[in-house]
Length: 55
Image 1 (cartoon, helix red, strand yellow):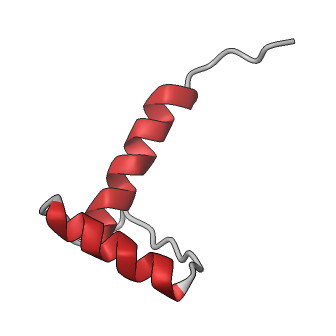
Image 2 (image 1 turned 180 degrees about the vertical axis):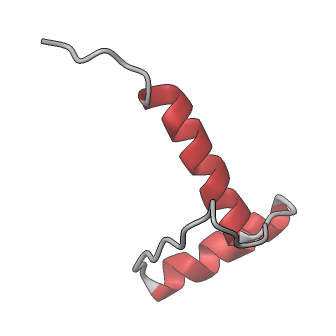
């Protein structure tokens, strides 16, 4: 994905070993870590983004 006016950078601090394992798992899925995080964000928004507030 090319960075343009419609993209922003997200910086996340993670444990070094968890990052290495995450990157290895991403490779097995033919993805890089950025692709996996973007997919997670899209799925999370689909699941939780349009909920009515429960009062």
